Length: 406
Image (cartoon, rainbow, N blue to C red; front, side, top):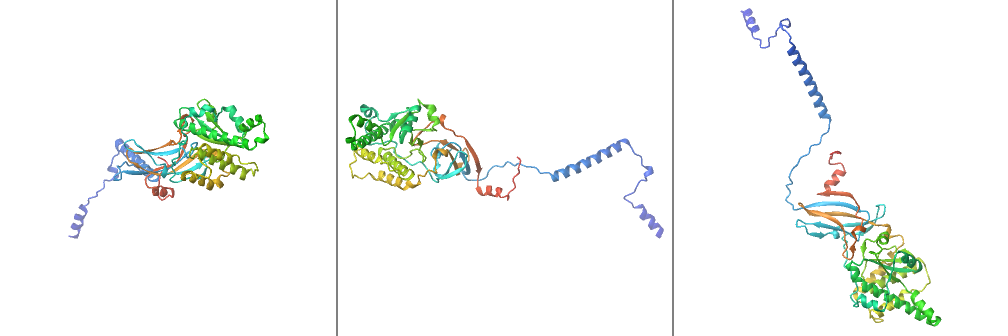
């Protein structure tokens, strides 16, 4: 009974083996075996390589944000454009431009691109008087008794700054509307200086013969008021770094005044006050000179020419300007040379329309006509990102992985 049970158990074998001596190999089976082994080895190699290699996967997805604006963070250096002329505009969907320069940080940049002095935040061009409205005579009427503002070219300009202590030059173009508006004011300023020279000569009239008196009235000019037509002398104006018209530039002892071009109200009173403060600073603090201050006579001549009585107070705006000049007097230091800092660094953020929002950096001034072919808009982009700047900081600190290659 037990033997029969063992036989029955031996018949139940689901894994029966065929003896090797009964098996026969074939070329087709051998080929398939080699192919299968090769494929398995290749799969093992490729999977191992894929496991140890880095790959980049890009996913394109639509932005589901419901905000109409996107934040743009930027830091851009204009290598040869002054901060006074650098303007940032935001362009809307309709193509209208909005000046947002007031919300941008500005830094003066030297010739090497190094940031030097903070120009200001929320710094927009302040409104100034583009010409003296109290000068009612036309330029033709002012020229009837002779031209007092001297026209210079390259050669006479060099002679003028070598032979005169102060030379105030108007670089202009005949097509410039601001220049045409300023012309009567500039001629009146020259008349004021001529009147001041006559006043100085009158004080010493007893020492002069008539010929010497006439000569003294010419050479005693407190400031030589001159003008250069940059249409006729374009190359020379480019050498002087003129970017906009009119450019009012003071030369002291043959050199450009280090504090920069005149950028305030273009009225006779304001310009005389400016020149007197420069003379006071130049002789009183830099040179320690004992020479008499000639522009005191110019101030008297200015009051006489403009109809301001002695002892009559200037209006509130003119008085405020004079007070500002006095407060800034100590800041006019020789360590700052304006021509050595031609560039401007612009930084900040803007809120733009998602589509098709954009922004422009332009060379523009409300008080000047910019000359395109004399303006260098070369720039360097240090930073231009979209969105929250916090994400950018996470990338910089390494908290978020960003592939090195794209």
